[in-house]
Image (cartoon, rainbow, N blue to C red; front, side, top):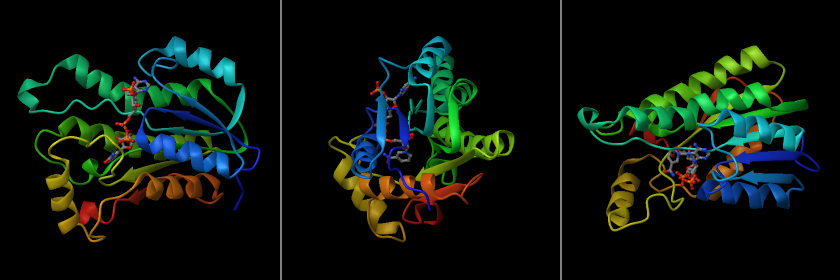
Length: 216
Ligand SMILES: NC(=O)c1ccc[n+]([C@@H]2O[C@H](COP(=O)([O-])OP(=O)(O)OC[C@H]3O[C@@H](n4cnc5c(N)ncnc54)[C@H](OP(=O)(O)O)[C@@H]3O)[C@@H](O)[C@H]2O)c1
């Protein structure tokens, strides 16, 4: 295993609860973390990605957690919302791979999600974008080798995104049926993400950190 000590880790989607935990854990392991949120870097805007690449210079690791879900019945979806969802999970990460420069030993971690393997009504775009992120990791791993590219697929995580009146009931029903019998935490995902980034023999695959939720 390599370590994060003195490595530069760029995080895209820093407003996410999972991203915030990853930033804290990576800094504790000695990484230099550059966290960017949407006002600084917008994945729908290639100019902002080019400017980011010039600003950060060579990096070791990239984690892209951005998500802009277009949920709802297919009959009611707006094209622009579908496009933004693909910008965040697929098109933006392709453009990051185009513009960023990595030091030898570097790695990219994309974020997929359990919806790709366990689709549900009203979650069609989420399923498609997450599946595309997993496919993208495989394709980029082949094209950009030896740069490693992997996807991480979380299950249901208490990241803040589910906060609201329906959260408790939803979490109870998910925890009752998934094999881990619990909801995931940002710490669960952070530990897996940093392990994948620093393992020199993991590339071109999707790591499921979902409590077995895709099987339930
Ligand atoms: N939480 C879960 O249960 C779960 C389950 C499966 C998969 N995942 C995946 O895990 C990742 C992190 O999840 P989370 O719940 O911590 O995230 P989250 O709260 O949904 O945060 C997503 C972040 O992406 C940013 N973003 C959206 N569009 C962007 C764009 N065009 N350019 C730049 N940034 C953009 C958002 O910025 P703003 O703050 O500006 O909106 C937000 O900070 C996501 O990819 C998510 O799909 C999460």
